[in-house]
Amino acid sequence: MRWIKKGRIFSVDEHGGWMRSHAQIPTVLVKDECLRIYFSSRPEPGLSLTTYLDVDRDNPEKILYVHDKPVLEPGPAGAFDEHGIMPSCVFSDGDKVWLYYGGWSRRNSIPYSNWTGIAWSEDGGQTFSKAFPGPVVDRTPQEIFSATAVFVLPEPDVWHMWYASGISWVEVDGKLEEVYRIRHGSSGDGIQWNRDNRELLPALRDHEPTHRPTVMRVGGQYHMWFCKRGVEDFRDGRNAYRLGYASSRDLSTWQRNDAKAGMDVSEHGWDSNMIAYPYVVQAGENIYMFYNGNGFGQSGFGYAVLDFQ
Image 1 (cartoon, rainbow, N blue to C red):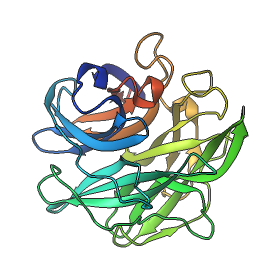
Image 2: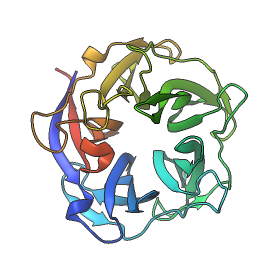
Image 3: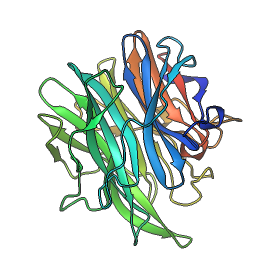
């Protein structure tokens, strides 16, 4: 399998309005009439808010509508989502749309703390209300730094969740950088989660963050794409985010093989330094990957189509 790049869809530089920078972490709801892409933008430095746009199902480069305001407001002082709301995973379950989101808050000793909340929509994903004021994926006795970038797959008997767990902070050139590793959880209702507290994928280097898993069943096998980077020179440098890949037949044991990820940075342009935050969906006969390029979404987001050959 390989991904055929189709180009950039959206960047804040081309839009303006209340969004001042970034179109980060594209998260896609497949609807009958369109693809609704939620993403995080920054109206000011240090504040991230989520909004959406609609694109054509068969030609995602064709933008049909851009929403003119955030769909959720940050929490009050001291809340887990005081300084930012970033989409993680979205899907329809009956008449309700579920949006898992990462809420973050600034800290003193470390740059930020990041946990996961839920919001629900009953109008097809136009407006949302927070299910709870606090996170549903929060710190535990074993996980103390962060749990974010969740991807949820509701199977008939159990809901599965893959997410990025913060395992440590390391100092690099006088700055603290967080190390994430992908872990798994299960649930009967999508709210109360049992987390395995084990890393699913082997690290390929010291202090390797792995982040933003997205999982799909294709051809009788489960496929996971995620992004990976180093902790040194990773802001559009030599260790910036790249695409990683793993596969499984039972959703428990995963085989990592990044050589099969199927896509790398371009020679030039908006995704020439970085591929970050992939999200994979199927719309009709097409399987799409939406992703960020350079600058963690500062250059916007685009998409690719899966080629099985």
